[in-house]
View 1: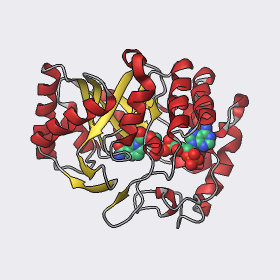
View 2: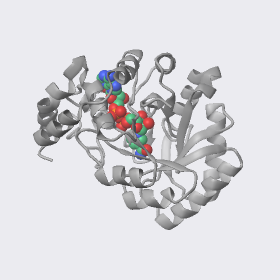
View 3: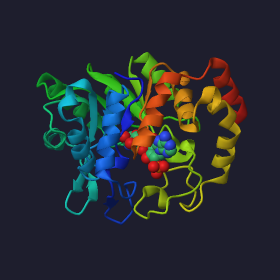
Length: 313
Ligand SMILES: NC(=O)c1ccc[n+]([C@@H]2O[C@H](COP(=O)([O-])OP(=O)(O)OC[C@H]3O[C@@H](n4cnc5c(N)ncnc54)[C@H](OP(=O)(O)O)[C@@H]3O)[C@@H](O)[C@H]2O)c1
């Protein structure tokens, strides 16, 4: 599997919560998304992360179409746990029952046009640990049935991730990690439990790729950031403190001819050999730039120390 994965949230297009909070990244061009996925494949990217709820099924459909006959060349990850309405593109809630997991898995296989999921991830980040233990056993059943190859929990809580880590076929934790948001406890757990660390929001949702303000598109989650989305301030203007820190890191991140986004990915690889960042993308240009980070590799240990010094860590 490539050291870099591609995150497929943005290519799901618009969707929202029942209260009208935008949960997608605004309008997307599906044909451009398909071209971007195929360009990534050509450039050696062999890991793709999506979720059933991204665009309420749309991301899985677009990804499945883009992969087509090359499906067996990649490691395919998706997530379950949310309940949504595809017609109105609305998130309705969550369901942590084993029965829902089985229904969701069948639906994801159908949308992705495949007979197995390589990494199946629980998407309810704050699920009850007792319920999660039951879902972990359900995932072991799915493995025995050949419907999935491995599973993970997408959570930023090391104690919760440890519950899944007890399962024989638990292979990873998905969690936030970028140069502005370190996650030492989760990285330590991955080391102890021999898990991969799959890193969401590696570009701080665009800020580490050079975005300086919120988007114009009101269907973009960053235009009305929920409490858990740091860095985008009130949605119109990014948090000035975040911008100041990113500016302070610019020389290090753009060393060796890297773009800022490539430097942000290079920091993650330097942080731990277990990391697999999964930057989002919306175009062939972004796909090319992000895939290009693989050739340049990680930052050096000295640069990592310098980053910590600049950020006062
Ligand atoms: N709970 C969960 O499990 C969870 C939560 C969040 C994310 N994820 C996963 O993690 C993936 C990535 O995280 P993320 O979506 O939060 O954000 P991210 O990867 O930190 O940022 C992605 C955004 O940055 C911009 N971008 C990407 N490459 C760029 C480039 N080369 N140049 C300029 N701009 C660039 C794009 O937005 P613009 O085009 O608007 O600039 C893109 O949508 C998601 O797609 C998803 O698969 C999972």
